[in-house]
Length: 252
Image 1: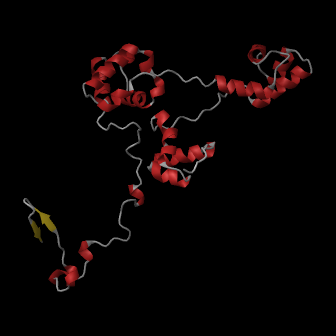
Image 2 (image 1 turned 180 degrees about the horizontal axis):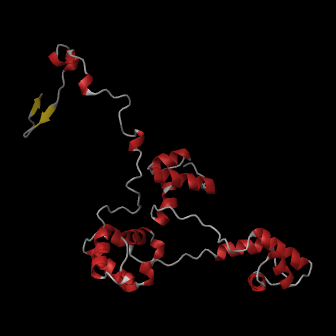
């Protein structure tokens, strides 16, 4: 058996895969672009339930890499925290916290501090169902009763019109089912959905508008020649075979 090396998708390739998935391409067609089976694409899409993860961005008030390099240069020249802060037009407390979190005054390095800060910032906010377990139990009970997420969201909105914490959108329910990393709703509840799909895809994600599945250069039956109507040529006849009981057949 031929051994295949494991493929690691780069950032650009992952973005291309998500773009194609959102446009409506199948996992098989995407896999062919990378000379792999669809089973190589599924692990990339499955952890987020087919929902594209949001692009991470840095806060505009956070220290930039250039500012951290300026802090590192100031530390190398034994400058005080206040003088570094004045040059960067930042509060001294900001510089002090930056040094404390990243090794202290004597061990500070700009690139290492920037990478560590980016890693620490990766702490996603808990979803509403994770914060309100009683609400999650109500949603799970309704799903077991074959209610759709839209019906559950509408029912909660009608029952609790003035209690925001007791309501949840249908999109949050779908995401909590699809993204199991949230740890809110059990995966078995996906079987209660009418589509029973483990990976979501927008109903607008389709290539049909681009001609996929259509006959190329098709000619309408209204434009067929008049010679077809009299059936003078054998090729203009259409036949079929009808199978009946007791091995009986009729040719039409």
